[in-house]
Amino acid sequence: MAEIGFVGLGNMGRPMALRLIAAGHAVRGFDVAAPAREAAGAAGIPTVEELAATAAGAEAVFTMLPAGADVRAVYCDAGGLLAVAGPDTLLVDSSTIDLETARDVHAEASAGGIAMLDAPVSGGVGGAEAGTLTFMVGGEASDVARGEPLMAAMGRNIVHAGGPGNGQAAKMCNNMILGVSMIAVSEAFALAERVGLDAQTLFDIVSTASGQCWSLTSYCPVPGPVPSSPANRDYRAGFTAAMMLKDLRLARGAAQANGANTPLGSHAASLYEQYCADGEEGSDFSGIIRMLRGGG
Image 1 (tube, rainbow, N blue to C red):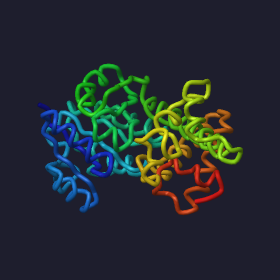
Image 2 (cartoon, rainbow, N blue to C red):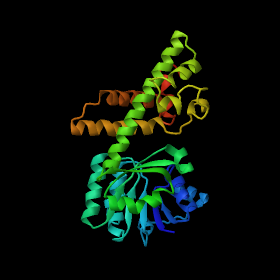
Image 3 (cartoon, helix red, strand yellow):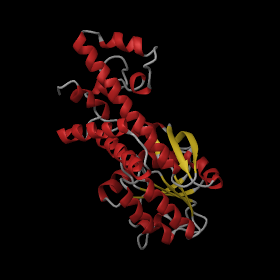
Image 4 (cartoon, rainbow, N blue to C red):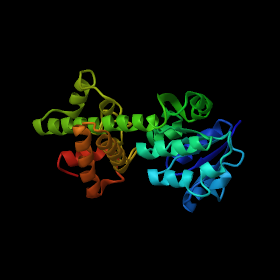
């Protein structure tokens, strides 16, 4: 059993912390928002009132935060994790943030003699609840080996992507593919509707042909072919359009900063910007088919 701090008890952090508890670890949770702490406590997660208390005597501290600015504050501000963590504490940031921040915070941790990993996840809230997340991990191999047994309580796949920041690099590339492919699949179904091709028939053909992809076979954006997809629940979010837009913007920013040519990724970001501006930020990202077909 390990002593673990967990900072960020929202939609992803709360079920992740519960998986650690279910695996027998002692968890101390913290969130700056009192309602999140209260919800976590009601779910069975012991909570503390101060950030510093999550690191006291902890073998590891995980963070799941909204944005790069939050990560900088939690780690680098006075009284932040880099100031209070012990030299043997492993810090693991599972937020999805910009590459520059991830590498900057890594560098500050390293300068202070503290081991850190960036380990964003894929799988959404459902994966967090089921313990089937994929962790994409950046950092030193020895630190990954230390963190892997803890991540295994929350995920099915733990992949070492390389040095500091490479976990974030892998996550932004993965989600750029996902955003682009969901738009392509949605456009195909919208076209099929206009030309009189039945959606189930299109699914049956494409799912066994060269157009097959995860956005089709696991997350089909029309009701019927994949019963578990949000399309069958009026696009109630498993992964919101706002979250997809955030990830596409991160990819676009990294591409601009590093001279990469990503026209489809950039256009996908523009389409999700339009979809969110229409008031659909909280809908599932697969609901963009409604905008693409020209109706709600």
